[in-house]
Amino acid sequence: MRHKVAGYKLGRTTAQRTGLRRSLVTELIDHGRIQTTEAKCKAIRDQAEKLVTLAKSGLVEDTGRQLHARRLVAARVNGGVAVMRKLFTDIAPRYIDRAGGYTRISKLGPRKGDNAPMAIIEWI
Image 1 (spheres, rainbow, N blue to C red):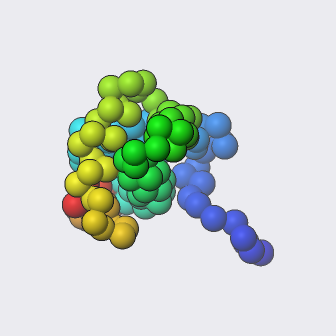
Image 2: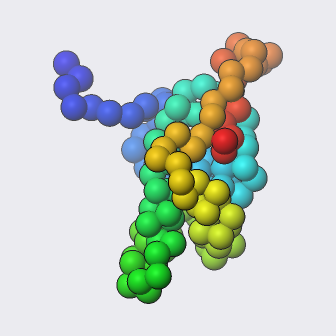
């Protein structure tokens, strides 16, 4: 039984899965939209939206909260200062009045090589 087991395994070990999700979320923040398989899109959607919510909480005037939010985001993405700056200055302020649902998954056709269902994930 799979009680209380969340997430997609994606046919990888735990370390590989963590690295894959981290790099995909970083690329989504950096480029705004990425094309990958549907399963990977669904796997990173929750993580990306949680990062935007964290970044929104870091937009307050309290410097302690700002620093805490930046450290939490830094622990979850690759790419260093440039990616964090983009998340906190470009992406999070766009959704300050939105309660959730920051990403959109659009399905494409199957991939030619292995017939895997492809999709695009992007910011709304």
